[in-house]
Figure 1 (cartoon, rainbow over the protein chains, first blue to last red):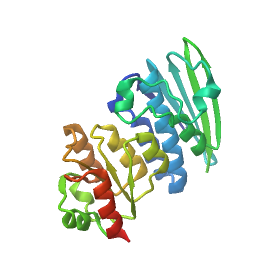
Figure 2 (tube, rainbow over the protein chains, first blue to last red):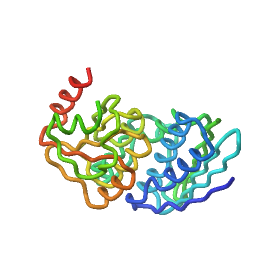
Figure 3 (cartoon, rainbow over the protein chains, first blue to last red):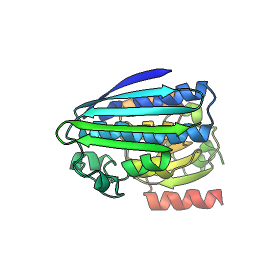
Length: 136
Length: 110
């Protein structure tokens, strides 16, 4: 099953829409609640990254009986140093974003912790692609 | 302890999400960093925070916390109350700061 959602850069009020929808779908197909929570934590953080840093993005989720594969692709500034971005506590978020309680440099670390497989690639000035898999 | 018991004993205000006040509280988590809550809060815990914007409901709902407690007389924005009602996750208010209210809830759960 393939699902697609749009994510709007800068619009925090819509952050969490895709994760909410995916949560409903996984519940309907009786995936274990702990696994659902891991998936949605990772996806929510991915959505927030697009909202906080990019112009726009898309979330594509592919669900079968063994796994969920999620691809979050955005048009945005990209990530110059991926290893540094993965480091807990490192963030380039704006002051406004930090005031909301985001941008503490925990997002990618949370994603890594909650996904079974992760791939992050980026082109500076073009955008970022985050792929992750969680096995059921 | 249920959400409504905590509400009564600590004289908290109920802003929204009344349908969830019978939920059982399994513990608590106090943090204003949303990623910290996403990473570390557990299902059924009451979440103590000073954040009042819409994203607290996304976090609360995805993590399935039992209730949100807003400290220092802070109030949720209108759109936040709406989602809280839809999701049945109560948003409560207290005049206490996070340290004090966390201490009281901790003692009640012991």
